[in-house]
Image 1 (cartoon, rainbow, N blue to C red):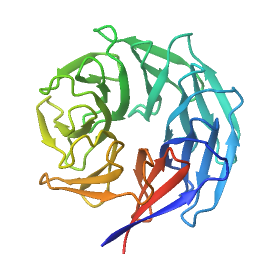
Image 2: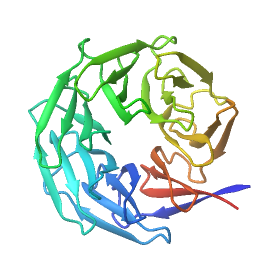
Image 3: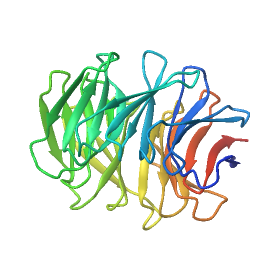
Image 4: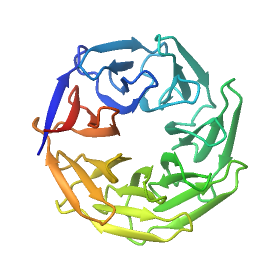
Length: 293
């Protein structure tokens, strides 16, 4: 049996979006509307840190190898960095970049997608920046993750492809079989493949590091899956923004769905926690936790 517990946030209408686990064992999340970085412990204690740039459009957040948390500021065209003590540094990008997804690369640098700039970016711990243009204009690169092959893998929401970029900047693209699937979230699976969600195709996708793609329909119609993460239970977990559920897919392709108690909670980012629970951000101003009873 599993149940969902929800924690209301102190700042009204903060709009939590991305979430990750910090090196301190707590969960750090972006507040898209509140313009803050939040932190919540496994016991539900919340701290909030205001980002210096107003209306920055905070989106995805991840933990770096330096122990700091790195996040994207989509509207402000900046990459943000926050220490475990709450000190924030911002690194400006070119106007119109629109950073969105971010992850730690195998080279120790932070790699990010630029949805409006149509590039994949790299930023070192010292703030040194490199950017690589994608072959097709308007591909709208979204989430990005490091793969088991030492490359970075990312979704291309508008060009309907999964992309791969090496740490030296070589890009390869793989078309998704379902037309207009709208891939968004992507994660590295326990099987060495990359797993992604199709917000329009209503499917879970799997791509091997050699580029072979399989797709699995989600039982609930119009589920609109958004983000996906790998659990230590040898399964993949994903949010269903449209159907207000948390989904789980096993390596044998079995899908289970868990309804969220709050109606229209709009779940977005999620992460597997060190406590064995799945933690997720609800735009309705809550952090959710799916636990095994």
